[in-house]
Picture 1 (cartoon, helix red, strand yellow):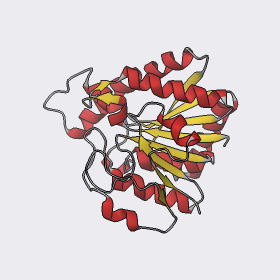
Picture 2 (spheres, one colour):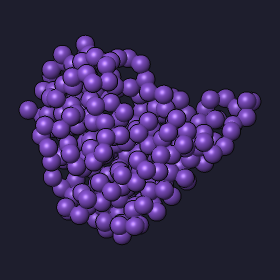
Picture 3 (cartoon, one colour):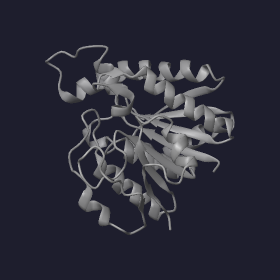
Length: 253
């Protein structure tokens, strides 16, 4: 593999949904640095800006939900990217911010410009950190969640694989913490749906159903997807190097 997209959710990056977990982010950067050392390009699709903003300022009660989200994301995105910048710099790597909206993937000119930007970053060894621009997105223009964004970025950059890091080990056969995980999902096999809970995470807009729907669609189009627990130590390296690692793999054949 030469290029991997990694999507990490808010519940992985934050504590209590409002404070950035510096230890967890540092561990994520450590693993991405290992991949870069192997010659693998990485595109990071990172949630966490809105949650981080909630821990930095308190929105007035007079603001509606959209305005609160805009405020929190504007403040939190600065904190989030600066944290990544400082941690990647310790390894001698540069990262760059790519804030996007849904329209950029469906307007040909915007699509071309965004794709060219990320390709230029990768060509020069810069790690793109992609997130939705919540300061300008409003409800009808928003992505379903960052899982949808991750899928679109994977296709746009022709990544060899997408790894989705959540607070779950994958598709579990029950709600028990130590429940058996479905290790592999074949294209057009929808039997996994019976095990999916429809509730959403506390910090994110999506849920496991959303992740799996986008993962299944990507796998059918030739892009393998891994869903794994981002809070597990060294999880990225483990799922790539160990075929028996705990995760759910959406395979292409």
